[in-house]
Image 1 (spheres, rainbow, N blue to C red):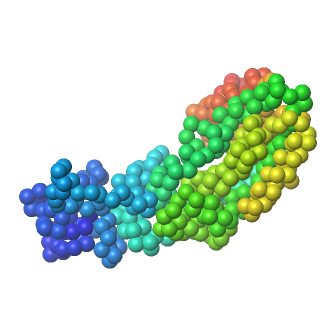
Image 2 (image 1 turned 90 degrees about the vertical axis):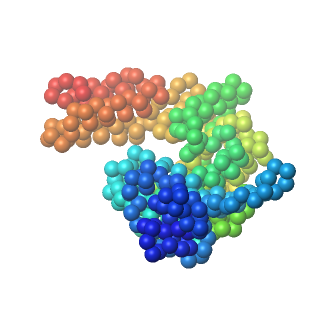
Image 3 (image 1 turned 30 degrees about the horizontal axis):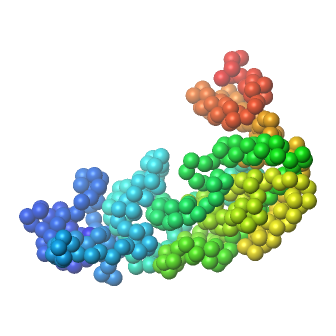
Length: 416
């Protein structure tokens, strides 16, 4: 909040924090006490923010005096803009809580928590003034199943990302088609697999020889053009300050004009927003009923070979208009062959785990057995890995396959 002072000393005046004045001793700048979190009341916030507020804009909601107006004695209050909702103090605190879930033991979270209130005010003031800039991200590679570079933004940046997504995601969520399953609440890979199989079953009942259209976008995150993305987002987000903030986020971490960091919350939402154009084109304009998408993987089932070829060409043209390319592994084939989607091989009669996934699990169990024999892995860690494997297999018709793989994973002559 603005006004007051921090320690009841000589720093009283405008743009200073008033955190510990008694109700009867509140100064005339605000006339109230700051309602802080438990960590602030307990003394975690022990210093003013490192960056003052030269703009004079309030860092927390103003507390105005009562002014009678009309019969009800109320003063009309303008609705906050989208940008004001994003930078609102309550939204920033909620974003901070979401960003630190299950990560309280990490060093960067502990470092910010050491003076959480002052650090949040610092982030808040930079967002208000438009001077916030992304920090230095941590980069690493994972293999799942192919090698991918992951860009992990620092914890303060993740707070900003959560604050943005909390406000703008509902605006786009209501516009997404039902059959988009990536990074959405209540959806996910297993729901997408079940939906794809239900489409296969419906197509087999409807047509004599249905065909599958499988489309994958080549290097999707690395190929997203920022101008195209923001132009698409501006159809819903009409606030120029929000669009400027989004451009700042997308242009950080070494991406200038093209590409989004894999691992940022804002990138997941942006990726869904961009391909939502394809979803509506296929569903609404072309009338394809059996269509499902998980991020940049699209599966459609149509009446025959000619319809499948035509749909693939049309999707390729629509992707090209967005500056994207179709992966060469995309194609069409009879529905009887099934389709690889979200880690499973899906048929209209049954579901199997993909062969490369089974091969990867065999390698993991072999490496885990060696680690256990050398004392680097505990029995509890081995059991956790087995339970993870069973959780994946339970969504497929793979009891015998699971039993065969686990029978080879024994520790000291006994099954883990």
